[in-house]
Image 1: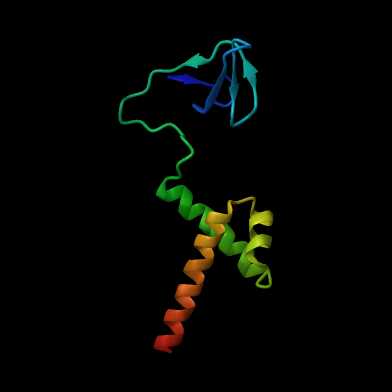
Image 2: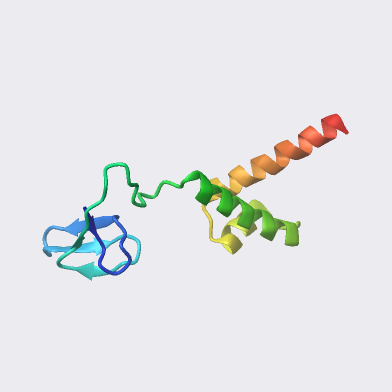
Length: 105
């Protein structure tokens, strides 16, 4: 598998006319990518979050929101450097848990 020699990301863009590659993660432009052997069941970062990564990101958003309860979704997105999708997912979980507590309490 071809990976970036700088950050080992597999997210490469081949620039055909310039006969070079560009890493979409770190932005490095290079001619020869690093070749690595990986087992078939090994997953290299493809932009898809694992369950652990998703949980860590949601926890980070929760910490920032707990410290700053007046923040809107857009504020959380900008402060946490997260996608709108991830912040909305957190927001939905918080809203659903509050609704559940209001029904039971």
